Image (cartoon, rainbow, N blue to C red; front, side, top):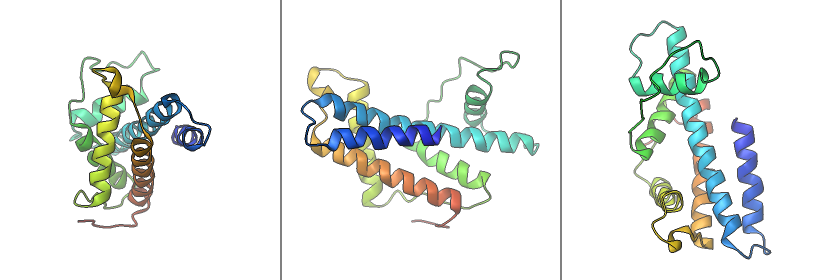
Length: 175
């Protein structure tokens, strides 16, 4: 899944940044691809973490993580039952932070995502672009200008790099 979603980011980003991009369609498509990557990787990380903890016999798995794992891992296995009505109501930024912690723990690393820097602030601003695009209230909400696109692409690259660091354990503690 990671490779497919990242390929979407690269391809749509190239199209959206090209000089022939005359409409918002390419910029909206790229923004959606970026956040599909971020959300897909985050959900996959929590599912991987929960599945590993479950296999190790850990009985103390948070309901959100267990539901995420069941919804993503067992979706195609109807013989398994899970709480289909459970909604992960954590704030988007909290889910992202939790996924970094989950994946680093799953691979035996210790990683604390820094939220006290410009990159995190940019990421939160890019989430506002996502929210505006995914939950529009008026036609103007669907406009993704070049500055919005640059912010989203920069934040996606940052997420990609930080996620790699979390898996590889490059940063032990970021504050």
